[in-house]
Image (cartoon, rainbow, N blue to C red; front, side, top):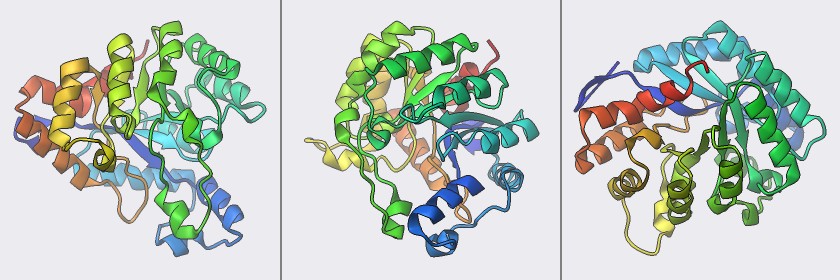
Length: 303
């Protein structure tokens, strides 16, 4: 429990990246340098189990109840599966899936059926695919057919600081980053919850529009939300929350930090800024409890 202006709240973080050994291995191969952790000043975990222990200890220290771990290398089922197996009461997980890769659908089906992951995370701009592609429909059918799960779809601005620091290119294609592209999928799979991270990361208006049409679309609040500087009118975090609450209500907003690497650990500053913004909005205790953990716990209940 974390003390807040609304009293103690059981916090659940909907967006924590799991920078596992396969994640660092992939970066090292791209950089052609085995010491990418040193170059980034990131701790390189010895194993997925060690990283799970590290996050478990960190969340204890921060008084955070649970977290959604994002497998941050495509298809890295084993790493997040290890964390979920070891600490099932603390961690849920979503698998980053690149549907362009052969066999990604079968790997996803296996991970879901075995309970290693609780959903998927899609990056259309990163992996150059459209949400209208027939492969995506097949992938969503697999998620729905395995008892359901949550589907994160990253939209809007996509900037990976660790790649910039390493001098690696980020060849993203923003043609595929509009939240409006979720409309057909959300309608086709009305029982699947779709999550748009970072309030749409610059496509806030479009995120609001598609969420207003589809009651199974949620927002996560994670990160710095620095996309606000690109809006054509002045905007702060309190006004973002105010508008999101007006359109989707308190039950479709999931608190997240976008925490990822050590020794930084859990980004308390993101939590504090969101507490301040929601205090400025004047939300009720019930609304605060839903956003900061209740909504994610409800989505993760066994079907």
